[in-house]
Image (cartoon, rainbow, N blue to C red; front, side, top):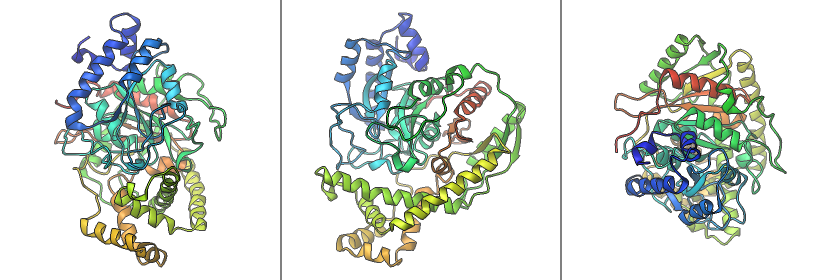
Length: 494
């Protein structure tokens, strides 16, 4: 098999080729590594290569529905025994004692794991620019971000290194890069895929593991591979009535779909993002679905603030964990250290009050889903942004870093004298991605589909939210839209 043929196959097709003897795992790994060698200098999708481990997997023999298919894990949440999980940070270097359940299930499916993809420090951003490994670029335009935090995964898939790659989504980190890179990104329901054994619920339940793919059927197949509880998981979600891949063969009923293009934060939404949704609405109507402009009765600003309070609170905990393992606080990037200081200024009572708001958001979304099967929005508020967009201005960073170094940052924050600066950091973090946090806070599934390209030729996905446990419905609709408006062969130019 040559590379053009390799790129014409999704993961299931590659597995079929291996079973039929038209290719083999070693040949596919060589193709993947050769492609990675070609794109790594320009795009930087992979943070750590695991070629020896991949060869050992092949030599030990491969079984499973995806046997022989090259695959990349994310360098956050996907532990490999004997390999550090660094979370894109100089501060994390502890070698994993065992495979995560995610990794173990990937291996059991026969996937050949040959590397870990790049992500921002602690997987905190919607862009991928860690100081430890360097910036990852978008294959559609290397001057722009591939999104984050699973930006390395998306760049690897879009550039043809692999047909799919592992990701995690704590605030949009699968859907954002999928939208930036013209790919499929499904964030499963809370509890669908185990976070264990090192964690129970990551980010207090906001995070879900998953994959970024080029085809709906690969997303369905991987959900079948990864789904199901493990001993000690906090709770179990009901299994599907049929395997997710089999559900794609079932007829799709007429759906009631509410849609909106308004930012929950009241911030601007680019015309291309609006057009992406409007064109999707027209396509849905042609396919026979009922569409209504409507949104859940949720205060988007309150939801964003509650999400960001969690976000700020998690950072000092992560810093303390690394320090307890021997890291130095200066090993963290300056912005991470600033946010850790700000996070320490929150009281436990304030955090508990924030978490109690999440029930209200979930109830309001539940009322919405009593009227509508799905909720359609843009995935992003703008096309993929140029590198550096949203970074704090150098003068602001210098001031905040100076205050942190002198100890005044925490004092001023506790007195409320930095509220405007904190709000600005929050707005800069979310203004391009205001649509994704709803699913994380409520624990519901959502999918970004590559249904729109801008006048400049940049991908810009649209997002469908579902009720808890409705991944099958999202995948069924995705398959119908994929057939009506195919995207698999729409590739970035080398």
